[in-house]
Length: 294
Image (cartoon, rainbow, N blue to C red; front, side, top):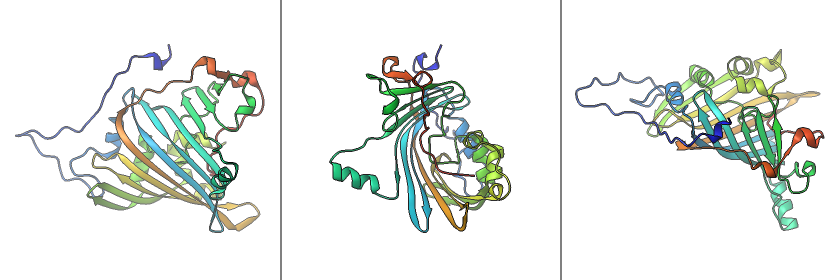
């Protein structure tokens, strides 16, 4: 039976306040909110069915000081007991900065956005670029099987803070740690080799482990935590050489906001009558655009 058929169970977790007569918590470490569980523990406590949060992503690839590709995505994430169970995101991609908006102004209408809904072994796509493959009366393409788009692969952000091991690596590689009135701040760098070793979702993005110079590429990160030690914002930056023009590398920046931790989230696939099986439709279907890495 598919999991989304299970009745909604709303679970909201919070940190219990110390009761009179109980021992107080030991002083927290720099860069950790006072009295809150560790960031990894706080994350794991939200791994409960039908709970989740909202995300908003912007990713840009710069070359020679100009944005050459921009990806926007926003949506919802649903957890289960092991981590991310499903994502539902809507986004747009453009070459350069403002080109799509300028073209929309000329033609007097919006071109629309691409929506991607992902579950384990299932993904559904709708929007510009996929309409060509759809039979009349269908608005969704369904990709079924383990080789489909992974739940977090459609997001511009390559560092997945929903993975406890990945979050732990960021914290351990922080060279700057500050406590803030709103929570905490961490800043540091991590190599692609390290990300590939600890992050399953990062491995899903690549055909194989980064080698040679690619393995040594560093990803700079800035991570803001709220007072409960949950991720509030993450920015990452990495520089990659371009074959043939090594002195003109691309610089990629991804900026992600996380809001509404612990909210009720129950995602569902689109109605079967609106969905076409991509395997039966045929054709060379392209997944949603992602930022280049490795």
